[in-house]
Image 1: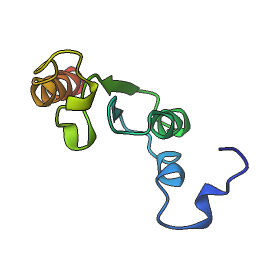
Image 2: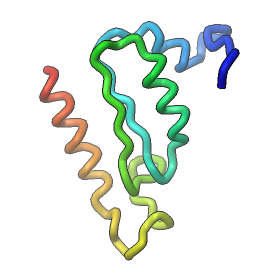
Image 3: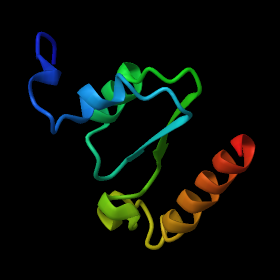
Length: 94
């Protein structure tokens, strides 16, 4: 969306990320999170060190998206993959 005054409310994530300058990890779930919203937040963030990742096969709350599977159990490891990635991302910075 364009032309939106994101800072017209004090409850706006798009407004808040424009002031975030610390390392930032934006995650999206391929089977549940609106990817365009997450991409917008990533693009708007002021952080110089920022990363955007989409977790394949995960629905909202990181759980496996069984509707996304081509074969049963294909995405059973979404929770582990998510936290493994986050751990590596944090370890690389702190």
